[in-house]
Length: 305
Ligand code: NAP
Image (cartoon, rainbow, N blue to C red; front, side, top):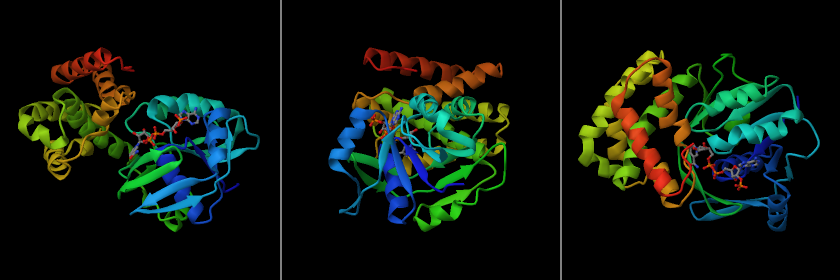
């Protein structure tokens, strides 16, 4: 199998992964949204990675989905709501047994993608690294973190994990990737929507711990009902730890809303509420929070799906 890393989406995380892989002399190709974006990239000719005020540039080749050539390994670095349509656009180029790595936050988009590409092996990634675009084609590495990779249908790790070590991408294979994704989703549900509704930094929620606690209790019962007891363990303590450790930060959903960007609510709180309904669980606090958030987004003219 070819060892080229095709990166679908040159946004924050896609650029961060692409630059580090290119720096380690791995073969990388970017797949950009359309010919307009491709031309814009070609005028610049490289991706910039900013780390501790040093910028390094990597002239990574790029193409659109219409490019020719088979794809053996694809890193999907779009937002959750874009992942399935983006993968559909390259589905015809994926060889049987291709590996598709899914960086999306939340849950739901991974299954949407898997349905599109039955010929591929989908590997889910839960990332705690932080990056943002300073401007087009220039990414700032903003927060050290970790990447957990796993395949819920096949516990065998892929042979290229050492590529990631060689590229300085902190990563580990886990047989419990769904536990990690559920835990992250639950923490996100307990924090992000409230920061939008209260218009505050994470630390501002320390003044609303009664609401955080009510949410955590419902989220714990949801996790147990969904067969995720490990993800439910000490959820509230963990949420409080995150609030203290990130008190001066703005949550990603808060930042999206402030910037007038679409949020990933459908794959976070929306997914949690859907799962509760599927299991016949009545979680009034979570439902009410979802409704208030949807109303808030609508009032701002932002999509809520
Ligand atoms: P982002 O900066 O918005 O980048 C997404 C990229 O996907 C954009 O460049 C967009 O292209 C591209 N895209 C969308 N549809 C496409 C298509 N059909 N073909 C090609 N490219 C397409 O998003 P991000 O912050 O990297 O987040 C990606 C995922 O990682 C999200 O689920 C996020 O929650 C998760 N995550 C992010 C971070 C972080 O620190 N950024 C940390 C952990 C997890 P255009 O530029 O043309 O719009």
